Image (cartoon, rainbow over all chains, first blue to last red; front, top):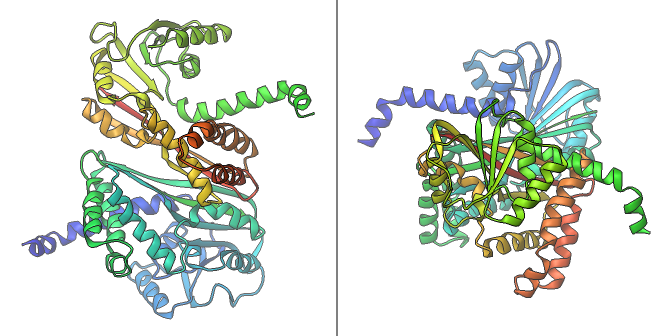
Length: 267
Length: 267
């Protein structure tokens, strides 16, 4: 029955997910608009989720999007083609060894990339090299240490911490958001401005409860279940209570808070 | 020498503290303005720090400010007199037993009060009684669970947690900010809107580093030193490293994040 329901409403569901993606995308991207003809480098485009927003917001900019994974680049190409977006060129390239001459780009955009790098300052220095003098870099990252919720139970916090530990174990830094200011400064950028981008959710906004608490945050936590339990981070009973308790944040009394950071620096 | 310096610059220092107070006050209060002639109850005015902002922002509203402590009310009266503010009447009164008839006030304002109460819903229900139909309540609280910083060390986190534990031990709820939505809802208010009020500080804003990180947050943590150590919450060595590490958030690479919540509900 559940399967039938899901398929029966698949179009509505799909619309809702797009709405949800738009809500977050607006929060993160709505103040990033590049002028006609400007050359923009997106470093670490992945499968193109942010590329689509970037290119749509700045339809007359010339965007070059690179990623180290050829498979990701191919998926990103397909995604943009499906959406009829044509102002992006893709290229497979390593962020630590960019195949561009110095001072090639007017602007650089890096979203959800630094968290995966062992040497984020090294990456930013390399990006600075290919940026024109006076050009801007925009960096967006989340910070899992910014997350809290109500009701809060020990088990819910433990389940959440499993996500943080699993991501840290993959050589990621899930708390890098708070570091954007020092990272940009230590890479030589000037006039740095960092702003938090807040996601506050209570039951007055059921769409966001569904899309952010359930489909984004709790889904992400649930994704590390096997790794968390098999590595002995948490026992099954605590895990199950933790997930159940996290779902309480989606009930009428529930509240959820998370924030991203967006930083802009000038060469 | 240090003493001489402090006195020599006392006027500048005083100006700076006022500027700092204004920065936070603007963040919390700038969207609270009551119209001429409207009757406003401030419940739990304490020594008048918020009363001053409230009365200054709404010079033609008729404000009644109450507190259970006669000493606090007297200090608040003096503070407002010193600032030449005359649109506030003070009264000693218990928030759980307000000496007002039902539906007396057009608006109610409650700032940094619920965190100190064992029964915040009971207090809000009592406030709702004296509010006119269609009138608004505004609630402002902090949330110590929202606090994080860079660099982050175990000892700095432990020192911060001592503050949280000491306040919790005093029957306070230092994490009540996130609960404003359910508290207002469970007290019968409608059309509730809660917004986070963010304090993000990095070294691009040295005034805020000084005024918020050092003079507000770290000073607050340092204030519980004796209690934290004598109760065995933390040992002296860990405490001292923790405080030293918290001061690292005030250096050029440092970052500090905290947020308040402001909620508005309608009867």
